[in-house]
Image 1 (cartoon, rainbow, N blue to C red):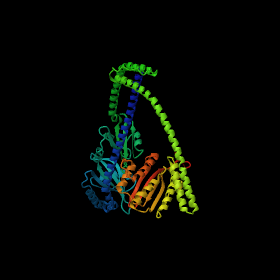
Image 2 (cartoon, rainbow, N blue to C red; image 1 turned 180 degrees about the vertical axis):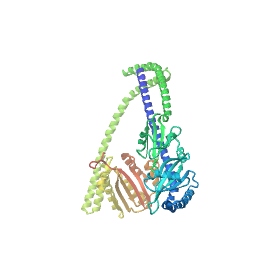
Image 3 (cartoon, helix red, strand yellow; image 1 turned 60 degrees about the horizontal axis):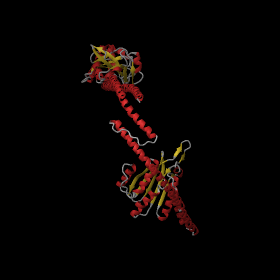
Image 4 (spheres, rainbow, N blue to C red; image 1 turned 135 degrees about the horizontal axis):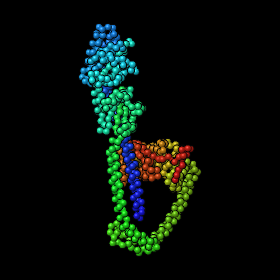
Amino acid sequence: MRKQIFTVFFILCVLLVGIGVYWYKMSSLAIRNNTLSLSRQLMNQMSSRMDVYIREIGNLTLPMTARSISAEFLDHAAEGPYERLLYSRPITKMISNSMVGRSDIYGISVVTQDGIGASSYSNLFAQRRFAEMAGKFESAGKFQIMGRTRYNDLELLTLAVKFYSPGTQNWGILMVDLKFEQILAVVSSIQLENRGFVWIADPQGRYMYHPQYEKRGGPVPGSLLEKIIMGNEGGDIHPSDEGEILIAYAVSDLTGLTFVSETPLNEINSDLIKLRNTTMFFGVFGLILGLLSAWFVSFSLTDSILVLQRLMKRIEIGDLDVRAPEKRRGEIGYLYRQFNKMVLEIKNLIRTVSALQVREKELELKRLDSKMQALQYQINPHFLYNTLEIVNSYAIVENVPEISRVVNSLARIFRYSVENHAKIVPLSIEMSHIRDYLDIQIERFERLRISIEVDDTAAARVQAVPMMLQPLLENAFKHGYQQHKLDPGYFSIRGMEKGDFFVMEIEDHGFGMEQEVKDHYNLLFSGEHENNDIHERGVGLWNVHSRIRLYFGMDCGLYIVCSEPHKTIIQIILPMAAADRSNGKGEFIV
């Protein structure tokens, strides 16, 4: 036994170590994925905020290109110094008006295709940058980020758009110089706690912003650049000199800027590593302590179990007078007392076995007697069949076909109710029975109209329980018509396939039940109410519903669709027969 205890503890140690390693790996993966997902969301937020800001600048300044004074400046500024001065003044005034209240905009400039500029702060600075920008535009009318620049020791981010004078080929460039502090404000609004930082790359693959100032304007490393140009957003693990880092990025479709977050992987998992080491230490300590405890406990348990083993061998040879010492305390004493109790119960069971055997023989005789009575009940109905056959013969001789038809229907109804003991029958057989029942009712009530819309081919593939429809019709005759002194006028039976089920609807135009009663029965059918307070009218409904669910499960049964003063519809949900999908043939399992 001691070997078994040590084996169990060894297996437990291996299992716990395996679980710990698996837990650590899965936890690290989950934290990594969650951090990557959060970083991607933050980068998308940063990209969206930058897009909103750029769109705002575009909405503010782009209308300037459509004004007539801008077109006149493009068309006439190159004609001479006077024209240049004449047409640049309205441009400068328009720019000044647009910059009112916008501290984030350092300056706006307009430069013609001839290199003549009009600026809110320096015409020469705008003209000097014109040649560099002129060849970078993909199309006119769309702002593009031209990158960072410096003016009087101030960092600027330049947006530019190429535009044309209406009806001419004269064109120019509208330059908007933003204070780079605005970009820093957008970046600083996104927090990555103390575990990472954010940088921005321009469409040319250069650092537009980086926390390390010396990297600004420099190229992004090729291996890192290949990862971030693969798609609009994503993330991955990237090796670096300081270890692996988790990179998440998002590319703006509007500006082409790439927003990247870097998070050292060892900082993400630092708390988890501490928790893993602490857990492993206490786990190993607990296992060693448990192993030592089991070592000492096993000695006391072994002697006690050996006592029980010797007593069990005596019981095996038939000695039921053995007794274990009951003076022991604790679990061993309880085990000894339970052992003595078990021996006494075994002796009592042996005494009752003979009495049970006699009882079984008596029950066998009763079962044989029941079988004889069942055979007798199968013989007796032949007298009634013969009697109905005589009545049918007289009706034929006297030329009364109505009586003959009613007698034949009655005989088939009686034979169906007596001889059909199957738990499940095809719906087509049940429909044949209900047609015989309705034929008799039509003879009773001259104004009764019957409508049956059930496809015989489909009905042959539907499973049903015997005597399922007759209680519903009898319920309608009694409580819908006769109880309210109404002549039965209309019954309808419809059926249609819906997936794996066949839905039937029984409709009558008798007096319906109250809304509260209808809701009560539907809750009862759904299983939300107990069936302790079923009214007389609901006994038949509950009987049919219970038998259907007993054989076909909780998805089948009854449901009262509506119950109005002159119309009641009860729905029956039945299963289709188990079908071979290759040939579509149904098979009933009874």
